[in-house]
Image 1 (tube, one colour):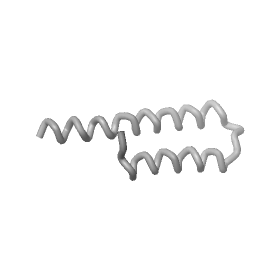
Image 2: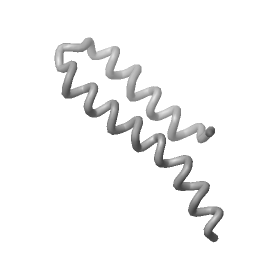
Image 3: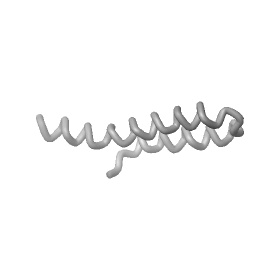
Image 4: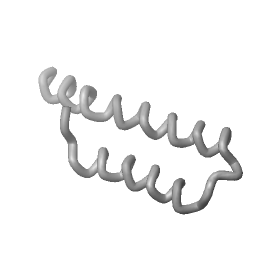
Length: 53
């Protein structure tokens, strides 16, 4: 059970950090083009869908 939890944590933690970076990027660069935000959230979604280390 511990190994499952640690594996899940090791996969979710980098994705969570990436989400926080994406949100901060969005607040800092409010004038950025909409397509850039779409690309950024696509990268986050792919990271969550395809778990790799």
